[in-house]
Image (cartoon, rainbow, N blue to C red; front, side, top):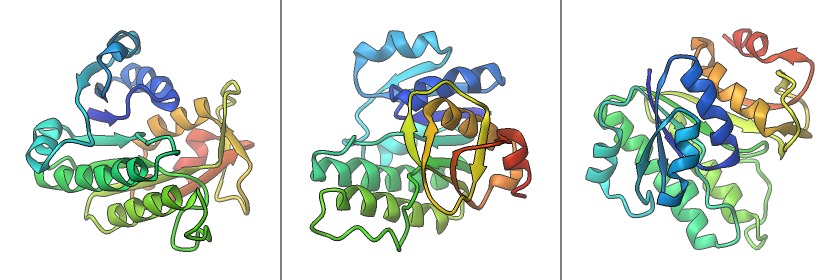
Length: 215
């Protein structure tokens, strides 16, 4: 597929891009900082430099034109609530709407374990903007008419990939970024992941098997 990955210089994205390229996909990686072009090129992806916080509807359509699938791994990184709302909610929703308009049918978004209407984070909490922004973006995607998948990994680590996860566990523990990258790549191969919210930890089941059994 022709894939546009938003947030291409994040730790998960840098691990996912070579997997997608190796699988035969044509990957366009969107970054804001031109200093990151060399890192992206090492993954085998093509680089597009643009500021997703500043794109209007026409800019999003131009960015996603010709794309068959969008993978959203972008995030403001916490800290600044205004930027969190702008990236994790507003830009994500703008990308979904543009994907629908230009016919980019498939959309995979990386959220977090515990997002959703019952996230339970009070408004006065510093984590609230992130929790609510992710929740609203996830809900918009679920109602978009796109072939969507919402990935909700638990606490991210830098451990080596095991290639094994637990899907829909009772509580979040941790998962390596490398395993999240593998879940992203594998989810695009399984039609059964469409229309699924997938919460997961590192675990015992091979990723391919875990996702295949969702459908």
